[in-house]
Image (cartoon, rainbow, N blue to C red):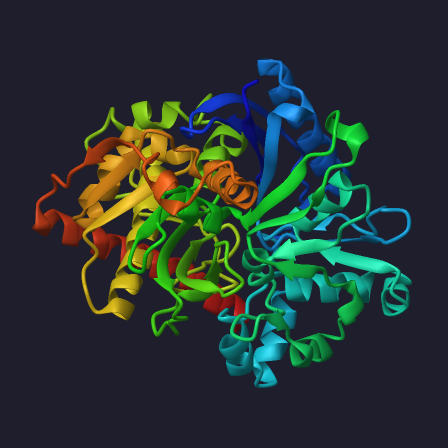
Length: 500
């Protein structure tokens, strides 16, 4: 009877389930988009119940596609949109408020207040993070402050907090397990990444009761078992990692110095740094990498808030394309952007700028700008943002990176990948399977239950799909990057005027 590893890939815009075999091949995949809620400008929410129902639905569908029963699922790996914050009633399991999504900027003022009170360096030293509304901590504080009665109930131990992985584990086990892993905990801005514990000083500062928080385990670990009634039997939940750390693992980046970039809703460049937590001097974050050991391994991360979301905006908001895949074809119809730059700072700017108040900006428009030029400029913005983060990483390391492994939905876009190679002047390596986030979660789960023996067996599964080699002349590269820097200054200047 064939055995599979199940990966639950709970993303920002959709829930997916993929079944993998031992060679890392996709055997079945089901996906379901869910509602994006925008109550006010800069606010982003999800319905936690819809996250759970869509994830359960695709799990059932993926099993049905290959006729697999629960006994054929060796284990479940969970990977998830990180930082997104859910609080719910311990006894009923009912959310007390919508999930506040990582993109949401509602707590920007709270962050500015923390900085003004001098907590900036303490937060950086202990969590590895730059204080920002991006992370979970101030989202929890907002819910405690603004949802009537919740703070008192939380103090009595009646309210639980979790990132999306914790919410899924809770529901899969029917409330038996309240847990997360090192990688997701490290993105809350509440977790001491050096001592591997919830930081009591930061909890006190934000008035968050410690009894709300989940237990924390290594990423490759048996967290619990699914309730038998959900998927037809009790299946071990044996791997959990935030989406970007899962992708780093799925790309086989287990050694210090290995780098990958994921092109999803946002763009996330991670470099494995081993047992050493490197303190960035260039606007990057220090975070925990996924692993199977109780001893943490670390990564440097550059977070770009808007990448694939800009393509989604072209499709759904601007209605310039019918599908995301059509953008590459449109962009290829023109030789350049006719001097247009799009800075998609819809939710502020992440690494290396960390400006919460920057907003989307389009510059350089002339009468000659066509629909194709605009689409091309939006696609190119993804590559420019990645180039900024890569430059910051090289600055921290003091050396050039030799190549960049890529994955995620937008990495399938050949135009974007070629422009990425051109603008960074470095080879881009795309694997045959670009679903490395889901694959990483499957690998972590498989290691915990013995489906895969060790890291060497996993490393052998990685197969190169295509190499994109730089073709652009250095002079043109520098000219385009200079234009991008000017455009970014415009987006940042908009924020400065607002603050003034």
